[in-house]
Length: 234
Image (cartoon, rainbow, N blue to C red):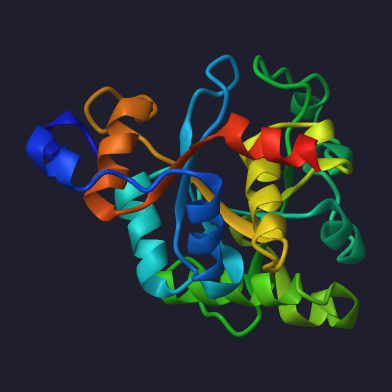
């Protein structure tokens, strides 16, 4: 996870500015590369490291753990999740603690269930999570051809997120932003999202520091408005 002391100096940053723009983000996703997405400042105000799920490898999981540090989740489009009979977790909870869950920045959570691929061992190591996630991504390509229950075990170590039915028209979280980017890139509608955290402050990595990280690694950094504006124009 990044903190101020780990940021590149200003000259290094100027020489390694992050590629900007939606076209570069789409190209990155098509090549299996991650994109950093910042949601609205009046929402979570967080930057997530986002990958197309079907290409994820164990080294990608290591980067998500070490450089991002948040919860590694796989967002699925609403239609894919419905085909796999995956509910919103809140719909399945009977415990009193889930009766009146309040989220200050949103109306509801996109969390669904947790899974492991049935061929994994513990499910938590990098190789296991990469297998679960990459198979999920490929399964999202043709969900009607997948027997989800025979492929995946519930509960597991990979958190699933279910996008809103009308995507960005309904909700504008990282779940929906990741799926919208996947759809623009014409890759399976499954995206890995993981919050970028700051070791020193104990909070979310600032957009400024996330931009420095993107520059050091030649990654694309997008604001949520870039994706939303493009979707609304279509």
